[in-house]
Length: 258
Image (tube, rainbow, N blue to C red; front, side):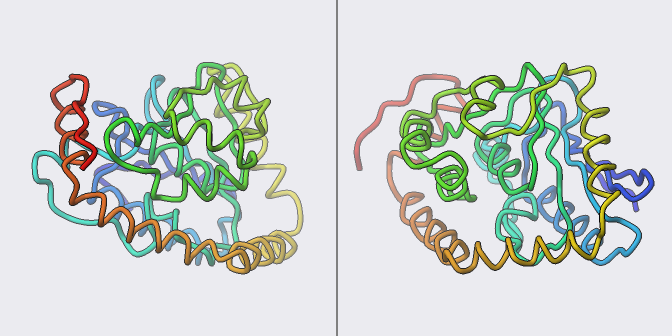
């Protein structure tokens, strides 16, 4: 099936999903969220697909995250029930997804990678949750998943400053499992996908089922729902409006603390 904002390709038992809005660094807006939800829904029920690789079009970006310019211009639509990129609140997928991060993964783009099972980064990859710099918060799982991935102290440093993390630092922190040359990124990601597809798919599904149950036992779904409630309150503040406007106008925000 052809999509407008995402490219999909089947390679043996692997589904290759490429976020395809390079003109905006693969930023995700409402129509793209819903396309990705459909892709993951179909992937989850296809018995001939055992693993997926998710990447971004071009050499500069995996994804810039939420398309703030689309939002500022009054773009209509909402995130789908399964969350950001159709992944952030999807807790029943029993097939693994490998994120091949080519370039920067910012905000919701980073949160999308964190919602995958394995992250492989190109050597020029940059990771950040810069939402606080534009009057927002990492509400698509960034707070919860980053804390669980690398520990509270290191995560808080990233969350409260919005600072950028290089691929090598991401490796040392445990955000990514591997850093490779950019021209070999997809090759290495395919190799990892083939390694996953070479073992028992029933065992993979069973493992994922336990991992999903662990997320539910630790109340990850409830915490993400609470994040949405907090965001709804944050959207009513002057600082939120100022952050979005300053981003679009490419200027430093003037915070009001109200």
